[in-house]
Image (cartoon, rainbow, N blue to C red; front, side, top):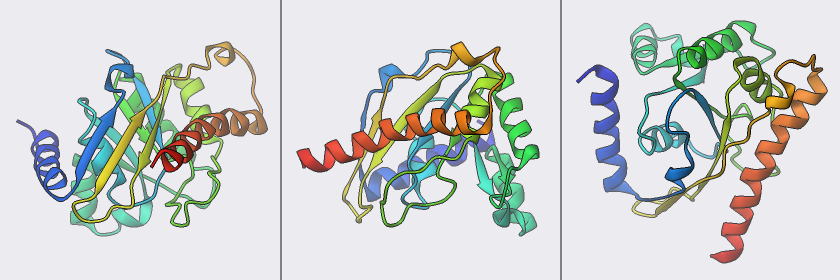
Length: 199
């Protein structure tokens, strides 16, 4: 067992002790090939919760500040994470993301760019759709519904993949990328609001 799977299983053990994790829609994940898992971001534990819920190795973009400590940065790299500069369009991070997908692996993205602590209206950045279209892969919207209270419930709602294949051979501007990314976030936001009404 390599370091990634050892760390994943260890984290899963602790998460499932501390929280009640309920996953809905695992059957909607593509059975093979690369895809992007896109979700809302409300807590530092979000990458761990999703990473331990999906039965494929995942890579994540992580803010570059986390890599300043060499030891911690090394561990993050071993876990499949790579740095992104959130202050602007980070071409290097976009290329790294596309390389992950071109290898047939799974990529996790938080399109809002940071945690939405106030749980306000979800606004996506254009990079999500840009990466998906350039890598020619589906996007799987995932809603994380929880207040992360100790021993409380974390609901993971996996939605049907969104495929923008009609844009694969088109020239697209930034505004269109943003609109396509926002469409994915609207799906996630709908699930979070629906859950709030039900509960």
